[in-house]
Length: 281
Image (cartoon, rainbow, N blue to C red; front, side):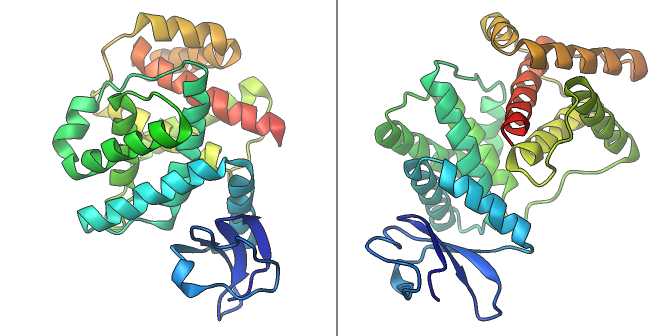
């Protein structure tokens, strides 16, 4: 494989034998290398084969904007997970975990740490992933000079559990599909933005809303309230908060479902992220 483009010391663009554009990762893969050089096979950790040039551009954008240290630690977590759990993880796991960690580090450096109300359940149902995630948090705190609590390990464990190649997909029903569609429409209309449906932030928000709706329909909504965090997101992200109130009103008036504060906190954070990304595009 020949280097077509260097994204950073650890990530390059190349082509496979089928002439498909691929993203190749490996520690020091591009160090002292240039375009046209042959890749050293023993340095390759992971190859992403995308179904379209758009996917490659999205990966390229992520790899060029995220701190290489974040990319490296996300890769280490996935490789360690595959080694210790005997599970295979999807290609998207590398990308979504990198994106999640990048945003989490940004939040952490601003002093915003999100409590994980599902931590007990995550430890119980995904013990292998949680064990990997706690090791990951240790590496993150050491390499990126952060101070994440175990709550963040719970979020990483969920990323891993949901990224198993043999993981069952979310159950899809007509009602849940309709609710997800309506919520996305409310967000789009409120901000007057057409979202990039190929972006990672949009897909992450959609996934969150799918789980949000699933919990609503199965009556498993979060109940433990963090009044300080609720007030913090309200003051820090006022537009996203106001938009979330419209979603809350829609669910109450149309679906006769009352949403509590803990659910609103996560909704506000995801709305703000995807809107900020859309404004930058």
